[in-house]
Length: 251
Length: 268
Image (cartoon, rainbow over all chains, first blue to last red):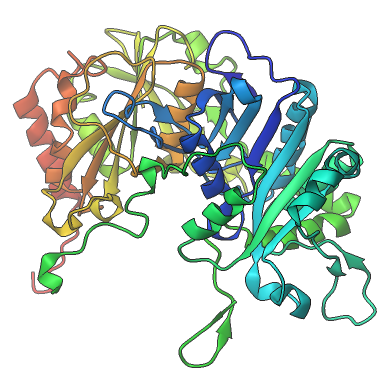
């Protein structure tokens, strides 16, 4: 459930909600971190849930000593009122069998808050691409039916490529075709539920392999209808991503 | 999938934990009403139960409704528990008021009802001389203190962890915690998971003052140095006045360590 930081909940109607799927390479989450950090979005509340592994730490977007000691938890909501932009950040993985429940609660909040549209940032395993996908851009999009009418012109001008339908059961030659997003976490569930609940949602994803996925995140945010013309600001919490310093005696 | 140096192709684990999601979706699609009922029953078995340990009866009233408290102290892990039990619970008379049992498929019994009293995972005590202190509550005037340990290799720093003077204490506090802390705060990019994180998250969201004291150590089993590393916390508001005789408590802690030492010399 959404719990505001202050006494009263902010009015989110008409805003665009950006959120990540916890997916391969954590690309969506890294992209949301970049957006929150660069646009200096302020925390407005928490999406308190028992569906993700609990986690706490100090402010991941700290820029100075004064703001480095605010506690952050695993699901937080940030906003930039001037651009009617709201971002939900997820910082840990789902507990087994709880991802569907989370999707239900999330979409119910989306409906009740009257968001104008939802953009999901995600990724998919690059090793699962077919021959055509290997030869084309690694970026893909999906739009729910009610989003297609409003976003169609914008999509065409950006030259995005729609996520192709692939065999539901790859091993069977006469299998039906459907949208599959291997490694995409809750992306497909969110997309399918939004289609049936008539929520305007766009999914933007990139085919990636796990490793240093910072360039993938930068690529994904560049590909957005840019909310920012500023250079992307790397959050202070991205340091030491690959572990602590090495003992000098090693050399 | 990943190709190894030897030419095999193996399924590599995904750090985003996204591997199971497609399988979970498939399972859900094929689920019958009987499968759903089995899943519901399993979920009920996994619920945390609060009981009176001696009688095994469920607590009729929520603990914090029956015993209002201003200080709630939680110790997680053997060294934190050893510290709390030697320094705080050996000073004054603490009364056991309940315990929490939880069951999952990793337990040896079939459900929580059949677990023995010694398998309670969490025991609640309150201080008889000052009932407002609750050891081991989302009431507005309550302050929560959590003590736990982590291995020093979990601590991220630009130096090598081998050069760190472990054990050492770090703290994390919620926005509403205004008192001074007894050590430096945990710097980014370090984070905390599991029960201590769950408690602190709850307190942060519901605006309760709470502080977590985290001891980074290179010895995860019961260890005197590690347990003693929590001593600075005795001067904090959460534990102030609860430890009556520090030298005596140190002796109790030492004896606890000795009693728990496994004799490893096969020649004695």
